[in-house]
Every structure is written in C-alpha cells, then in structure tokens.
Image (cartoon, rainbow over the protein chains, first blue to last red):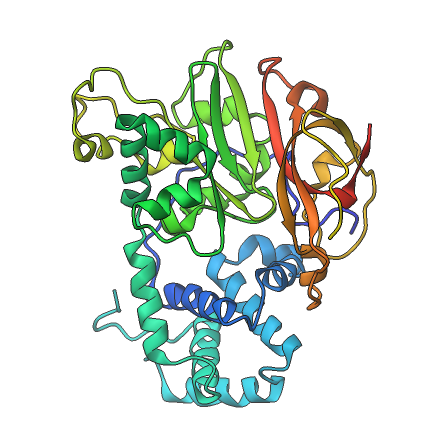
Length: 102
Length: 201
Length: 95
C-alpha cells in the first residue's frame, strides 16, 4: 500500500491525454513566484516541496489542482522549517477571511 | 487578469496564498514587489525563447554543435540566462525521435518554455508516456514509422530537457525569425513536429 | 568526493529496493538492467535534501538507458525504443 508512492505513476494504466491547458490565475502565478523566491534565497529546497506534495493523501493528490498542491506543500515546508507556526497561520487566515475578497 | 465586478469568496487555497504571502512579508522574508517582479519575469518566459534557440541551431551548425554539447552555455551565449539548472538539448533525426516527461512530478525546462501546460502534469501523460510513447504521440496526432526509434527522457534529476526538432523541408533560405515561428512548444517537448511551411501559423 | 564507479556503456542494474522517504528512482525501473549512457556529474542527494539535510557529499548521477522491450512485458513499439532516466550511483550495481 505504501511501497509505491501515489505520485510514482510511470507505467500505470491511465486514460487518453486530453490536451487541456489553462491560463494561470494571478494567485497561481504568485504561488509560483513565492516558491522561486524562497528557493532562490536558499530558504527551502525543491526536494522538500516535492516530498510534501508526495505526502498528500492520494485522494487529495488526485483532486487538487497543481497550484493548490504547491501552496499546501509550501505551507508544510515552511512549518517544518519553523519559518511560520500553525498558530500564526490560523490567526492570519481568520483575519484575511474576515476582510472579504481582495 | 484580476476578476472584475464579481464577488467570489476566496477558496481555501487562495486564502492560504494570501495568508502565506502576508506572513512572509511581515517577517521580512519576501516583499510584495519581489513577488510582482517574479510573476512578471515568469510571464516573460514563453516558448518563443526556446523557438529562438531552435531556429538558430537550424541555420548555424556551429551553434547547433554547441547546443548539443552544452545547452546551458549555448543559451547563455544568446543572452538567455539559465539559472542553476542544467539544460540538455536532444536532437531529433530520421532515426531517433525524443519525447520528454517527468513521471514523478512535472519537471520541465521552464526557463525556455515557461510554465508547463496542464496536460504535461496530468496523470495520463505522466503514466503512459514512458510505457506506450507511440500511442500517446498518436493521440497528439504524431505517427512515427517503426524505423524511427523513440527515446523517452524521464526527467528525474537536475537536468531539464528540450527537444531540438528537425527543420521542416521547404524552408531553405528562411531567416531565423521566420523559422522560429514554425517552432511550437509541443515540438520542443516532443509530442508533435514543427509547423510545416505553408500552414497558417 | 565520491568516486564515479561506472563508465559509459557499462551494464548496470537498478536496486530492487522500496524504501520510504523521498526517492527519485521511479518504481517502474527498480530491478531493471540498463546501460550507462553517460555520467551527468555529481549532485547533492535529493533523498537527503528532502529531509532538510545538505545531501553532501555529492553523489555521481548517471543517465541510464533501458530498452523498452526489456522494461515492459507487453511493449509493442520498436526494438530500438528506449527510456532514459537519471539515476544516482547508490541505486545502481554492476549487472
């Protein structure tokens, strides 16, 4: 059940490749930007980010969009590194939510 | 582009993005200006960059040799910065057709081609390209003869691959600029061929 | 400096091991035999980097070429079709 990572999918049966693509939203581009900035500053590595994506539950891995996975992984990575705390996240999320949409 | 007019509450993940960004700015780890600059820099990385490199390799055999030996240095000689990654150009010939995939995640030569398309990151592409490349390529409309070997590159480490497609026939004497317009992103991933001359680009 | 043990053209076998952790040797290639296409250089170990360690000393990384007909029992393409994967030295042994 865990010998093969859910992300490690090379060779598994799958469906037709649908040539879908979408123009990325600003928030998605900002996720990408934050990842590049923090990596460039040597504060996180892409390896930690990948590990945290691989650790997502299989259903979440399949259902989440690409940048949803990256923002979740970035958050976990920063928590692991002690750059943010869960409490800081919780309080800030409440604060942002209470402001309404940006 | 930002939404105009319609109020939509943030999704859980959008909320996370705003939260993280504000926390990181408060802690002095990033600034909003840096984020905006980085977003702009990434927007500027489009497949046209890769197309320029391919077109130059088509007209300049010296450059082509340089590109195949050391793609990072070759691109930098054109003023395209290749920060930290090792770029490898693999050449299509009548005997060999190359196609790139990252089965484990979505590694891609972003600095030349921009952000990868959704299908490149999809389960279906990542699972099947290593196992049945000919069938996958046919789904993209590319049918190769059995005389042409397929070489699939699974980018598992630090190298990033770009395919150097074959120059289409009927383009003798074309300028680099004109040739670059035939070079599609998908031909540099290896799932299709460059646009033939005479097609509407 | 970890010395490079393999040379281009050498036959190597990927360890048939299934450890937990962050691994960049794909499941589908474990236990398979291929040929060293080239030494790509030495790089910090991603398995260690993922655990917030420095991944040093850098490990030799090889591009290894496998014949598709040898990897997939039902492969229907050409005899000459190959898949090439970058694999770290510690995942390889002499075939």
